[in-house]
Length: 449
Picture 1 (cartoon, rainbow, N blue to C red):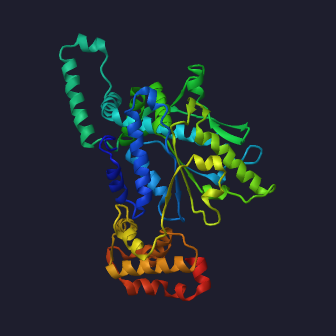
Picture 2 (cartoon, rainbow, N blue to C red):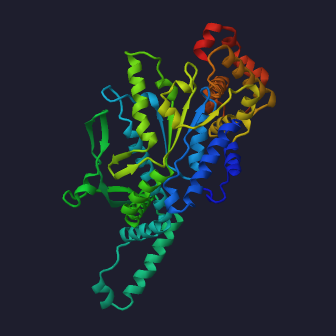
Picture 3 (cartoon, rainbow, N blue to C red):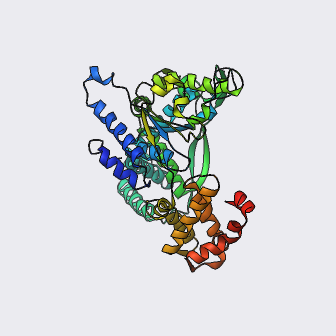
């Protein structure tokens, strides 16, 4: 996570450019929204509560980077992030999930995020304590009575322990089996009926009822390497403050949480008085209080959504943002349009980002001992074919590249274990040869690509 003070809008855009090609307008919108969150924290307390996040609506076809922009933005500042599809929810009285479950999911993600940070913070100390416990298992300490009765016993035991510690650290004991006590945890789930439908709720029964139901421990026989991992995890759990994790998780969800509502255009219905559009309008009405600022009960306590940043996204192919109910439109004052991707964009997507698609495939095949060399003309050809298919069939943006590259590498991927070690050069001719049958058959193209 970068220092929030140094995370200027320009710096945010630079970081996003490392993973997402183009879409400068959308990047600038989320960068300003992120900076405004930091600015709000610098305000006096009386002004801070009055500053409401300016929610964003990203408009553009599928596969152009809407979700990735929001996800990478959240990762920059370690903000709790939840992505939901508007089509999973439905108005009260219809089958579907309650919209308040979005907030409960955000709190769960936030608490898990804080817990992971705390575990990372105490990791070193937990490893030291786990090593001591492992040494006690491998070489039990002598009783206090014998150590004091016989001269030199304590010194001899200390030397033996040092030798055992050296072996343990060098890995000489990794294959030895030891017996350890592990807690058998059962976190029950209940299905409860809420006004919005049936929800699955996790209940922390041991935490809620204290020691009424003591934890059950079982003995497992494992190798030293596995024992070290389990004991380290146990010690780390003891070192973290669960109450602080919960409180900080709830605070971060309220102050820094980001909820990404995808497919918002799918809950826009025509002006009809009956049929499924009633449910679509109902989803918008149920989303409205959450976006405006509501109080939601979670298993950790009450959470307010006043300062949660909402980012809605949709292709709006068959509807317009103005078709949303006016109240919901007003809660997304910032609009950013993402452009369709063309051949030049595809060339950059294949090669430039840190997680570029061709880099991923090269790394995958290297695990089999296959070195794949994509020539520049092959990259151009893949990009051109993907753009051509998007224009003739449905435009699914950069996702088309996955399909094309997978087809190009299908034979190599299948035969990789038998070919290794080998070096495969892929040029434009190779790409055309692998795809010519599909591209010539229009009917086959629809199903394969």
